[in-house]
Image (tube, rainbow, N blue to C red; front, top):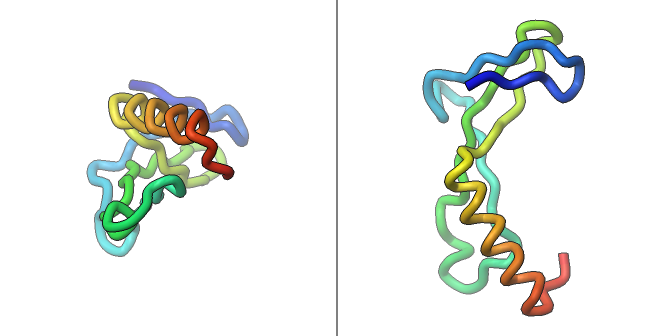
Length: 81
């Protein structure tokens, strides 16, 4: 899989792991309530731009699709972001 940097257009390289050392990127869905809010959150793989040096976390496509479905349900249910 190849990604282009959204900042400079350079080539990006995916990290070997999601959480090597102290680098750990995660995101929590704002529409989750109750005990679901206490969950681990969504972990993302960091990608490094070989041109500008930016490190940008990205979520895997299959997980992103699940989040899209949850987001649309929350939005249709009246959740305000």
